[in-house]
Image 1 (tube, rainbow, N blue to C red):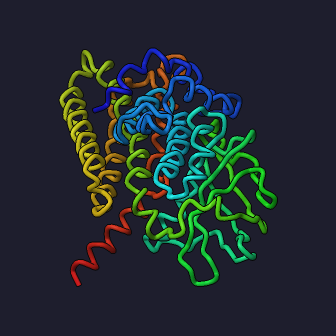
Image 2 (image 1 turned 45 degrees about the vertical axis):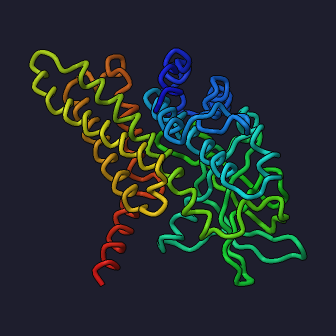
Amino acid sequence: MNAPAENLDGDIGWFSRHAASLDSSANDADAVLGQLASIGLFEIGVPRVLGGSGGTTGDALEAIANVAEHSLTAAFVFWGHRTFIEYLLQTPNEILRESWLPLLLQGRFAGATGLSNAMKFLSGIEALQVSASPRGADWRLNGRLPWVTNLRKAGFIVAAAAARDNKAAPAIVAITNDMSGVTRSEDLNLIALRGGNTAAITIDNAIIGSEQILHENAREFCPLVRPAFLGLQIGLSIGLGRIALRKAREHSHGAHSILLPRVDALSAELEGIAGNIHEGLAGNRFIDEPSALFRIRIRLAEIVQTALGLELDAVGGRAYLHDQSGGFERRWREGAFIPVITPSLTQLQGELARHTACHRQ
């Protein structure tokens, strides 16, 4: 199932060598996309007829997980870019797909998923942050996207949901950095993952035409792409959990060998969940059962925290020594990001609670 990602270790050493820099600074931020593209990662799960290497969404998830073992920053960029590619695969707008897909597969332009707001809107968590008003045959956009990753300054295209004031359904639109009225902020002052080109976008009277509409109805499009949006995102947790457990196992000798049963049990649970995700994505189960994917995301975040705790227990005091921690301090910061990635664990738990309450009525 995950063959396309199995043989990448020999090719992605760059991410291990630059993991600390990508976490703490923006020095290598603009190199990430090209590095990912150079080993064909964006092509995984994209049909060959569209320029990809074939395979499944599950294969793309495993590729993201593989990168996350080396650098969560790089994997986060990978997720955002690959998710926009997924939007292009699902859009009925063939002109938009034909224009942008080759550029994104080659890493010549940055794709960003700005649909976190839309996913929360569909769950009743928050209002849409971008509005659209008719301007002849075009639309005038206004609003703000406060947190988007992979906004490479050299050029980006980002998806956003726009509430239309003519009572039509919200639309999913594609916004580019060179549009008049689109402004990228300076990079957000993050405590980690600083090399991911994460910034805010302000949209002030930007004009788009029909050629920039990914879908006319967000309520139809978002449930269709949500399994890939969340499924690919889960690759971050799987990868970070795997590397933490592997490090814990490596250091569980002597007195620390008492940790091995817990490490083995958690590893088995992690891989079992990964298998369930693959089956659900392949069978399109999560389109009609999004709550199952929500529960998986919540449990994996818990597994990541436990895995990092086991790594800390196994490494001991050396985890606090820069020259002996083996990257633990970076993984600890990366792990702190997993619960707050949109949709956050709190938002997912709230959605599950509402779902349960509705079924009890």
